[in-house]
Image (cartoon, rainbow, N blue to C red; front, side, top):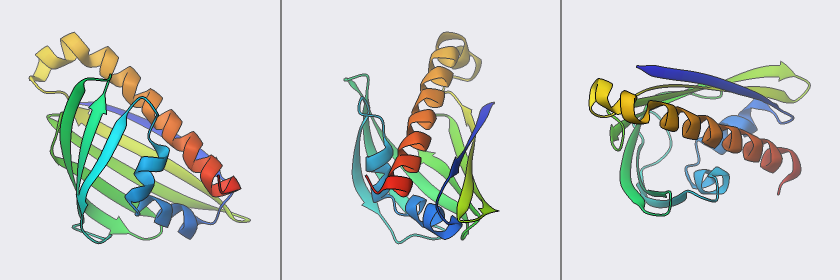
Length: 151
């Protein structure tokens, strides 16, 4: 299993940061421009929420990603896991920490396994790790920009 963690401090109250992320439509606003995301369906926010996405990467690689929220603790924690998608397994934990004075630390921790066990890691492990880190860096920066400036 591979994992990584990234955090960013945002000048916005914890409730605002949390609820920005429980609105799946905002995923479209924080996805890097070279990745196309289509929201196929979603149930109401909360524990057990189901989300289906169509994703196109590298201009040609298309996949469907079905995700379920398995833990929902407003405004401090949200965990989603891939039910169906390009990974063997993928679990994302988002933690939100109130830093006081209207500031929030958002931390993403991701545990994932590539398909084909060790073979997938051997052939694509470094590429996938790099792409995920790049994507989360972009998401964090866009989240900060949107919540701090409204743009």
